[in-house]
Structure formats: C-alpha cells, structure tokens
Image 1 (cartoon, rainbow, N blue to C red):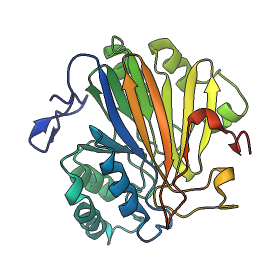
Image 2: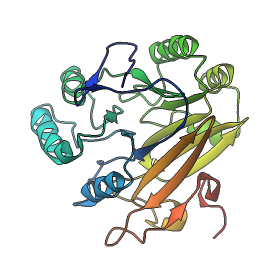
Image 3: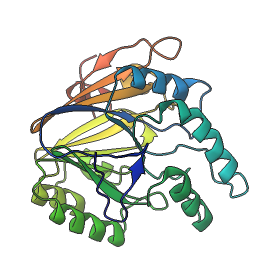
Length: 276
C-alpha cells in the first residue's frame, strides 16, 4: 500500500498506506478527544471504531490536553500507549489547538503523529488533505497556498476530502455565503467534503454541492445543553467510499456514554437535528 504525502513518504506499520484503483473502502472519523477529556470516552470510541474494521482512522484534532510545554512529551507518550492496540490500522491525526500552540509543541506533534503539520495522501480513488489551523481561527495564506497546489496536483482523483481542526468556514456556512476562498478552491478542484472539529457539536451544511461537517466529540466535554438533539454527543463516524460517492454513518457511542443512535449528515443542520 502506498501513502503519498506532499512533504514526506510516511511508512505505517511496515506498509505504505494507499492503493491505486477504485472500489469500496471504509474509514472512521473521530472527533476531539480533549478540551476537557472525559474519562473512558476516547477509549470506547476506538473500541467501536476498530469493530468496524476500517482501512484507516482519521481524527479532526485535539488528541492531547496540551497547552503546557513541560507536559507535552509525557501526554503524547500516554496517548501512544492508548493507541498501541490499534496500530494495525493507519492513524492520521489533524493538528488541533490542544496539540499545537508553540514551536516545541509543533515539533512534538510531528514526532509523535509521524506527520507534518499539513499533508495529504491518497487511498484508492480518494484524496485526503489535512490542513493546519491549530494556532489561528482562519486558514492562513500559507495553508491556502499549500491546499491549492495540492488540489491542482491531485485533480484527477474523483473523491476529495479536506480536513482541518477549526471550522474556519463555519460563519460563511451559517450565512449560506459561497463566496470565500476555501469554497472557491473546493469547487474549482472538485473537493466535495470539508470536515472539522473543535466545537464538539454535530453540524451539517451544504453549499453549492459541497458538504461541510463539524464533528461531534469523541472524548472532549459536551457543552451548552449537552443534548443529543442539539448535536452534543460522543461519536465515531464510519465513512464508506464507493466509486464516486461517500456515505457517512454517524454513530453515537453505546452505553454508558450514549444510546448508540445512528444518523446521517442529512439529519443534521446548523443547530442540531433538523427533525426532532
């Protein structure tokens, strides 16, 4: 299997991740672990994710609690211990604000995640871009330049995903405004799925054929009403890619962390469930 990264060629578990050709494959999306990590939730999310037998797992960021340079390495060693049983599946981490807040924490992320702060990879007919907005509410000009070059170089891939930690697009999505740089690039190069975390709330928007998802938590504390109907719950999401289409199955964790309810992006809107 071959993983193509713009910055490096990453070896995972002795295999190069990514395969040529089309066909059906599945991967799991995890939300934030931290930002007030709740005991046992992330571990349960991984147990349920592994039971799906995905080809790989991608997280939207905030894997460690962070924000203290003196504790960074110890926290990454702790999370590596948690992830050790699941290393047979490639794991792709997105840098979140709890993961990267300083130069030394950026170096630690790259060391422990075994990825640069931004990177991309192919798996079969799909292309994945992971962007870094860990230290900014917006996507910086440098990130947008990286994204444009990467999408142009991979224009032939029929299915494209863009991941970042912060949903820098959220206000434009709420206002149904399609006139902003990320949306224009996504439209130009056919990237139809833009996914983030940070808020811990399940939100869904559609702008001119592009799906925007804010993923609910996979361990970070639940905010506001803490109600499932408002998008506050613990989850792991199974994405099935079949030829040129993607099906998302958003799976609330089982008891004691949830009721194992299953939903689709179309069930959600800008403020929780559309039909209550």
